[in-house]
Length: 142
Image 1 (cartoon, rainbow, N blue to C red):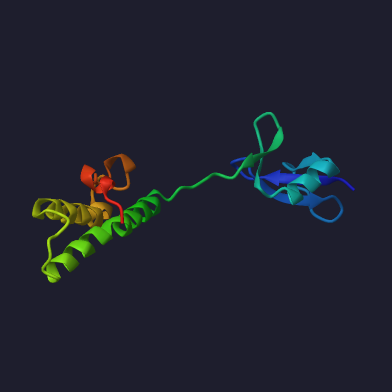
Image 2 (cartoon, rainbow, N blue to C red; image 1 turned 180 degrees about the vertical axis):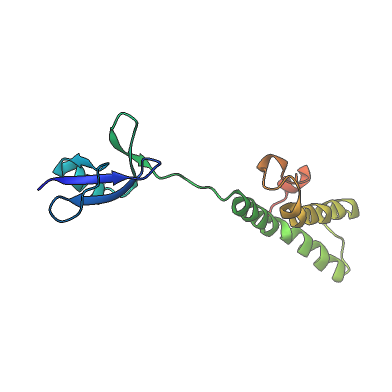
């Protein structure tokens, strides 16, 4: 029983056919039973034929959703630092001395707003263009 594989215009495996069971098109490629079985069992890649007729499995293309990655970074950054804003506001409501100066609190609020605005920026989602936290924020621990 001869086994065949057909490929689309980009050289990607399109169909597996068996002689006397299927109509075999002229462009079908006869393959060994071992290769036939590999194409069925090894689905962790894309089976392709090259210009020389070599059939091989290639890794799946990794598609990175950069906007989603940058939104996740932004969301985690907001979560990471919002405690500073909450502490400052709590201290103000309790009418006790605040840990942050008014200047630093304004820098914090400005940075938080930059993070919120990041997805609407023309430079989004280039991670090199992310808003930059004031250096003193990294020294804070909660």
